[in-house]
Length: 314
Picture (cartoon, rainbow, N blue to C red):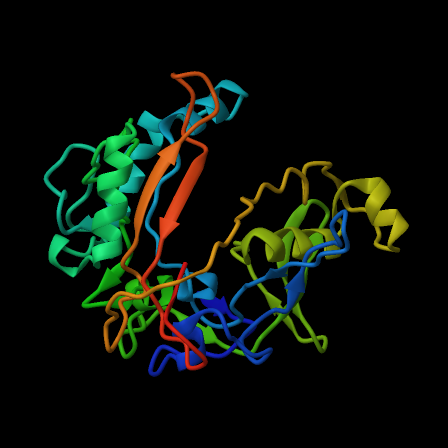
């Protein structure tokens, strides 16, 4: 097997700018931006260009709502209902607090944990008390089916360090003997023989024959590779000068992302010398009927120091 990675292999030493996640240079960032919005605003779409991909900066280990999975199955996607997917979710994780519960796993490659009560700041404690007073009860496990309330965020971390798909499945120094990892190898397109994938072409023209090709290039990368290979909506492919090999209208369609609004305020309380940026409280709410899935998250983050004035709380 060959694993192709467009960026570098950083398993031995993940750079601080990736650990931080918010100030990456183009050396490790794909540089995607959104289309201009109504008022001309353009958003950065952070995607990591390195082995492990964007899991290198994503720390939350939140599952989708069971009703979302069930809706996908009802739309015709057999095998995507929550009960059908749950065994795979359990197999993936090692939940350090709730691994003995029937909806969790205890021996998977991805550790899931929550910071203990003692590590909350006074702001977190006050927020949880206020939320409880207005009807959002305390929730210990946000991944419990039906959970909606306020509590600590489940995170894929070990000893305070984010666990990536690379560090979990391919720890440094333990690459399986039947696997070759090729970093700095960006894929141009999939080579097709008829309707069958027969290999990969890299940028620069190098060709790698293959009996089977698996694309795992992310939300933006996988559709782009497919369309460069001639697989996608025929009208769009012709418009950009790509020969149509397979007319597949769904490729690149139905992208759904979640908007966010950040509110910063001066904070006069104490802060940690080394802030636990992953310590968060969150709650879910919904404008939908009572039986609808949650659709709102309030993320109460750690106060951060501000060299030009008082600490800032988000």
